[in-house]
Image 1 (cartoon, helix red, strand yellow):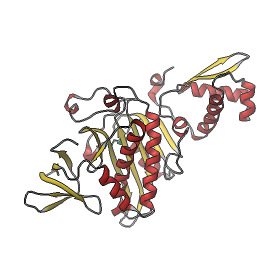
Image 2 (cartoon, helix red, strand yellow):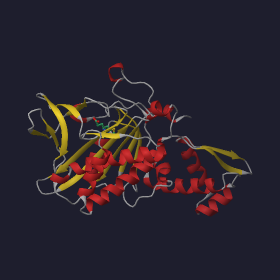
Image 3 (tube, helix red, strand yellow):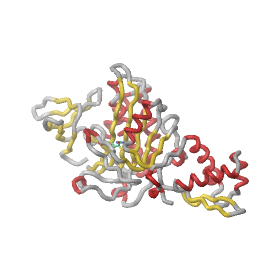
Image 4 (cartoon, protein in one colour):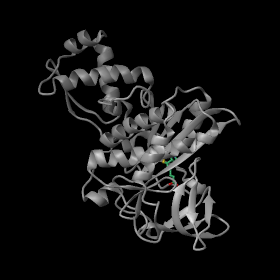
Length: 342
Ligand code: BTN
């Protein structure tokens, strides 16, 4: 049964099942050219043949095609294209981010779910991912369109040991990680539009929503929510000239899994750089990948428009715009429109 037809469209793999299922898949993949008998599987996994059968059925339920021939054995024919923890972890090289993954077919919003899990002490680096969101949230109270299985919708829980003032750095590391992973996996040259939109050819391909719970002196947790348009082929008409997807850029359907892994790896690399007290390196990398600095911009700051040249970043991630008068104006939040394309 295809996953999209699952009753209630909601399915959660428990943590304990995840590791057993991962082991079953490892064994099946290690002998993908042949059938493995139930007896051999039960010996390798140190569990009864009935237990093996139950796990095989659970894997089939989430979309793995596993052939079974009586008196011969099992063979893995294909894997689902879902962002299942088992699949993300297979070949993920991180120490912390993504070591614990919570997956749901449909969530309200992965950021809301991550906030809830963080309140319940979910470990640092926990990733919450879902195939669709009913109420995906964007910056400044906007919605984030979350078509099922088309995009990547994920949130990462971090517990950095630094003062809330430094939190904007975390938005920067996510934008850097997005640009680096798009280049690494697809050779796509994306650029960052302040503060955290990722653009290709002047159109938005990914966005970041960073939310935190903190006191004056201490951050409890930060949720980094990342949405990427991957295999979307259509957008609402009003957005058509402003957004794009990887499939539209590359003219082909692409795999989301490799991108998620590369993204988590790059995110961890820059998180560690920032934690180990090198935020200046993060700022420097952001500037290198910026499509905003040095450009003529119009910034909608809510109660008006600021026009000028985006001149530099402030120490807490604000944007300075040089006005026609030569004066500089600091902008803490707003929507940037580039006068020339990125
Ligand atoms: C923006 O550019 O406005 C930010 C968009 C952030 C969308 C992502 S999708 C995963 C996570 N969950 C949400 O509800 N929002 C973020």
